Length: 129
Image (cartoon, rainbow, N blue to C red):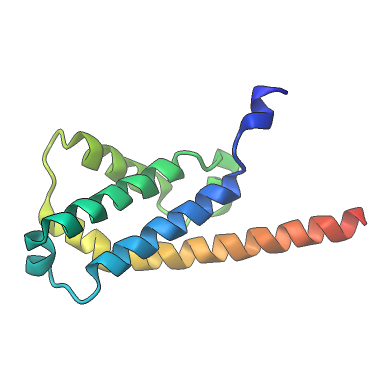
């Protein structure tokens, strides 16, 4: 079996990203920024899931990224790199803004990608029958 045959289907990474985004929103539901920052476990778990969103985004093929240019793929990946390496520190206001503004929007985009890709698979199966 070739290495290509061992690659994970990109659609699974979209599913992963959706799951990670849902966790971020679930973990922070009902919290304000002060509450979020004061709960160490919530903070750590949320940052980890933001990192995982970015890691999964690195696995999305360029042709798929180009098909969905409204998704800020490069920014998602850059955020992951910054969180993991924290080479310039983590700005708490920026993280909170990402959680409140960007993650819900991203979740909507990802759900659209998932539904469109399922429709594409269904259409491919109809054509091959």
